[in-house]
Image 1 (cartoon, rainbow, N blue to C red):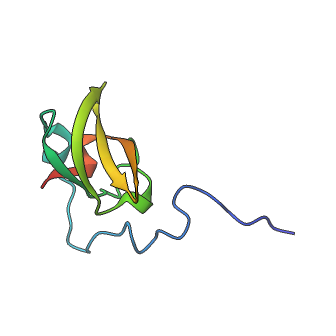
Image 2 (image 1 turned 30 degrees about the horizontal axis):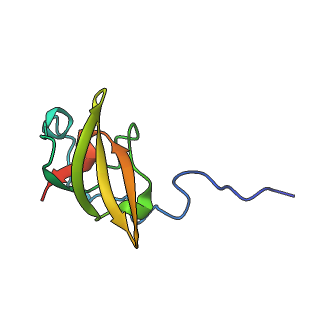
Length: 94
């Protein structure tokens, strides 16, 4: 029997899709944010490095720190506070 795939991008083909005319741009990769700045998690499907889990797409949070090239984003998930590590191309200023 074939085993069901339970990979990271399972059931996200439509969620992580960009439009037909969306082109690769360099500017999202060199964005800089300051600590305390509000951001929204917005995935870039053609960059898999540092992509947060698809369940956090569209969530907004605050930058709490920097880890290498990535940012630590603090979001509220129900009554819990979670820290999401994400590269800058998957974030946009709120």
